[in-house]
Image (cartoon, rainbow, N blue to C red; front, top):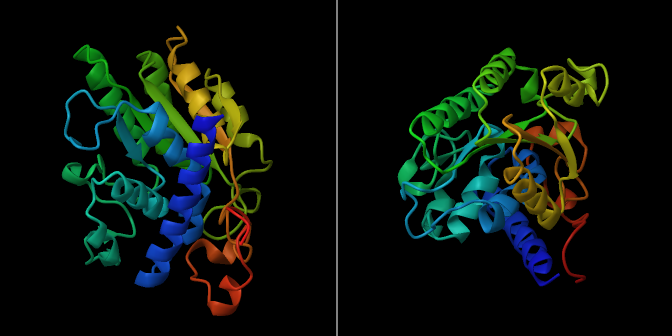
Length: 275
């Protein structure tokens, strides 16, 4: 219970940090970041083998953050861990900034791969997992994707490869918030909300569905799957809400990039301590 409370409070702290970073820098893609905060907290504060004081440690677990538009969640976590200097967060946002809106590789600051173009991260993660297996390395590869991003054909080719080569050292977490850039996924490519899970099962994977805004449950599921003997990649579908935490933003497609104004922010939050 104590650990669960720590993770919950840490997730609320990171959410506040994401919101303040984006508002201060006039940067969009807040909603995409807010939906995956608990996933990032579960990974970095419990599930992953990671040394914040040594982000280039060879034995570290690697995270490929394929859901590039959610970059501020990653930046906020890495800053909280002391990997990214706090002052750098004030320079995030545009393509000329230190921390761009779409992630660029910077291992010194804990960023393993550039993933601005969606559908690239999972193939990179699969390659990293194969390399680790061939070299008999013990570290794991984690990849966070979006459900809209899973419409990219490159991901399914990568999954075929991962299954063929039995990359059990790969864990994929899909941020299933039901929205993509312009609309709900069912209004763009998917016919039903469960299509992603059906496709994963059809490829021979065993996806596990989990509440996406409970960092403790997510971490527990990640750790449990890591210990199983199954030779297939592990897949978790985290059920989330896009824009989670801001009343004006939750499940509202227009906030994929749009920044809320003062009146919208005044509508309040849906998490944290009572004020």
